[in-house]
Amino acid sequence: MTKRRLIVALGILGLAAALGIAALAVRYGGGENEAALQPVDIGGPFTMTDQNGETVTEQDLLGHPSLVFFGYTFCPDVCPSTLAEIAGWLDTLGEEGKDLAVYFVTVDPARDTAEALGQYAGYFSPRIVALRGNANQTAEIAASYKAYYKRIEMDDGTGDYLMDHTAAVYLMKSDGTFFDAITFTATPEEAVAKLRRLIAAS
Amino acid sequence: MRFLRPLALVLVLMATGGVASAHEFEIGDLELDHPWIAEPPPGAPTAAGYLEITNESDAADRLIAVRCVFARKAEIHEVTIDAAGTMQMRPLPDGIEIPAGGTVTLARGGYHLMFMHVAERPVAGDMIPVTLIFEHAGEIDVMFSVQKPGMQDDDHMDMDMDMDGTMEMESGQ
Ligand SMILES: [Cu+2]
Image (cartoon, rainbow over all chains, first blue to last red; front, side, top):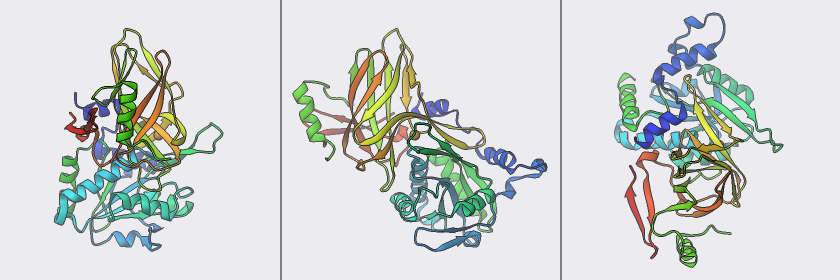
């Protein structure tokens, strides 16, 4: 049994792969018209600030394929692993992936300063744009992407807390619409194949 | 204080006449394999530790706590990702059972040792002492090697250290 299989078995991980995003749209879309929610509903307006202090909105995602990933710097496991993998995908794609933009969105703006966020993302790749907003702006971008996040207090009197959050990487086409998602269990080969399809579709 | 560098570790090993060549530790019937910490990005307040624990006895044991000096708080955590793609990370107050004759792997996307409020950023190549506390086997001091987080676990190189201080990299399967 390879370690990767073991990880899969251990983690009770999101086997639904891309389908998980559809499920996610249904689950977090809320409301009575859940059945009408489709992956096409993913993506939409937001106003955030990047690590250089520039404003980034949904308009900046137009004209090139994009990856969008939600996380926070207090996370030592899934977030850094995913960002490291994204950097690996970019390396593998090389010239082919030169138009891909990557956005890392913090779900924890209370602790993630713009500086810490920029350092964190930049460690993996200078191409990762780290996005931060205030509480309302964070709620807006999460709603646009049907991304879930929730603060979980650690009841040990330290004031520390954890964040539950959507861990899939969103693949967005150059017209700003949702294409597919890459989940944590995807192999690098699967991920790069999906990115090639995204680039071809953009 | 800097963390112990590999050379210092070798000296420690020589002084105690302990662990021979492989980067593994033993306490009673427990074998602890490939303890490593993923190098955290600059500015990250946390770090995660991983290893493989094999229980060769015919009685279950339990990893119940972790202690270290490089971070103010250390806990045993579990990450799960549900079918909707939501990641949850939670402390395991009762720790992790190591079944009789079984192996438990702490790895990305599953169990990890969670180090919080890291005083000094661990850097690839550092060796960091961590104490693992088992319900039956008791306490054991383990040296964790800090490695870049760039690869999935099954792509990782296992680092073995010889008594003369040379490191051997072998492809982990
Ligand atoms: Cu943790």
